[in-house]
Length: 350
Image (cartoon, rainbow, N blue to C red):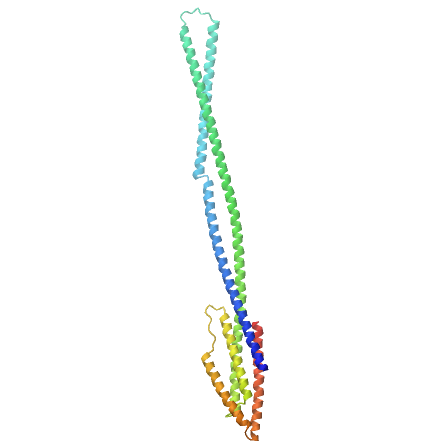
């Protein structure tokens, strides 16, 4: 009963370990999904950064001295030349007006101070000349007014265009500054994502290494236990010769087989947990083990019949029974040792 209870505990421990293995497998899958999401975010940030770079290039081209801006500055320069030409014309015409005004004053003063004794002086001609000068002065003044209005318009246009150009340049510089700030933020985000990705990879690798070491140790322990079981069976065969073991020995062998089977199940589950891309299946021949179990069952049946015959035989067979009991004690001790090794493996897995 005690051994059955231990076997039940081992089965419960294996179920618990199976749950833990599934939980770890789920965590590994979640970690892989996190890594994929981080890579996707890095790709999106890289594309966004490239788009921002392209936009900065476009804005820089717009603010360059060449292209449209250069044409606008050329337009302002030619407008300045036109204003200067108009101002020069105004000064010349003002000079002409001043000269004509002086001539009129001189002619008026001379006409009033000198008596009209010279009959040959044509008065009508003087009046015509005076009217002509007045008309010319009026025309010049009108022309000056037109030129001044045109200059005012040109100055206003120049001021408005210059203001718009300055406003566009300021807005472009603001856009460039904002884009550069966004690029710095995106660069920091990319660096943070790279660090997080490296941490996730290191965590995944740290989880893989102990698991691989545990699998290798389990392989070695399994091979050692197989060798011990084989040697145990050979010693039993040599000791008993043609005699079959008693019923107690048969139960111990059955428990050994059950423990061996539990080890194989544990080995298969650990192989499934292996992080290798294509994990190899454990080297366990299930069909051979099934045949071996069936053979052991038949042998146990024969052993029970033999024990029954021995128990009913003469008293001198008691010596052989005592020898078998001593062998049973040896088998029990080795079974106990194997159970302890399995318990140690369980603790390492936990």
